[in-house]
Image 1 (cartoon, rainbow, N blue to C red):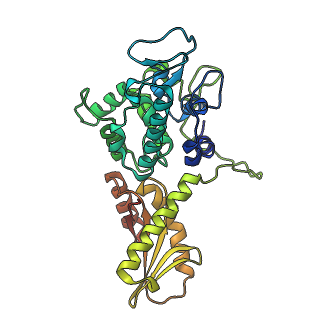
Image 2 (cartoon, rainbow, N blue to C red; image 1 turned 90 degrees about the vertical axis):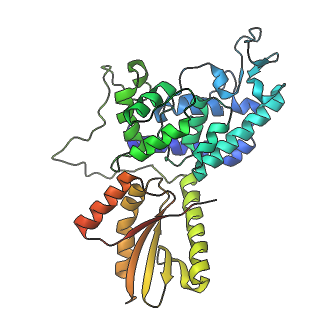
Image 3 (cartoon, rainbow, N blue to C red; image 1 turned 120 degrees about the vertical axis):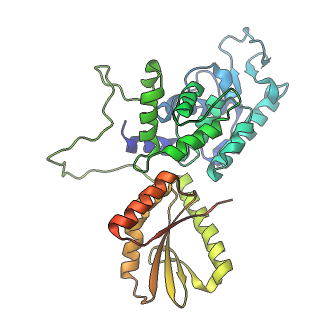
Length: 351
């Protein structure tokens, strides 16, 4: 499965399970037997290529419908049909209400990048971090199994034990993601090295020969020049994040320079700041890594600046949500030194 197809799959999930749909979610829509369209089915099965959470019983969802109503597992709360974690209450209605509240919290925390707070939620790690990834705008690395996490942590020099938080390991992976790889390519790279052989087939494409399909791009001497349609569209989550970053930056600039000097969406420029001695062009991107924001923004912002008739000094600023990692900083320095481009990258927190 190629990267575009993975992004399409993520968008399909996000279009199906908007925050509004989650807020109106019923227990039967959340989890249930013989229903392939539940939230949990989407998270575990339909989006398996976005990271596998296979393993552990269905209690990983917090609550589940038993195949055999008469088999009531020990250590969980049970009624005539469902079983759920004891921490969620004494009856299924209360339990599901609390679980749904936790799911909504995970979604909102993921959007804001407050990943350390997700550790405090009592849903099992395997499930809650998959949910977190799906709503993180591809900031998190889609690996969820603790044994693989620990191997990766050791590789990068982090000492781990049973008390180590998943957010710490996720942060470690994020900081070490090479600037030229997206989260899926990095996931493949890590899982190839640290994942179990029998689990790799769950996320890698398997050909009829039983071999993994190639994920490196081979050189070619010819190209398909026929018209092709690409179905990848910008997700609602990414669009909303772009707007929130833009609004937050407008507020910051307006407070500092005055509203009259901050121009929004003029000639396709996200934000333009007018000052007596200079003009700033801000291009906002919703990608979750500085390097990706820069790759998407530089061509646009230079083109807008080129066609702008203002004779004042022009400054070019790429804007994202997160500060640059060390690998991002190396990428920025490489561009500045080799292409002689003068630009800045800034991050703006959203609420």
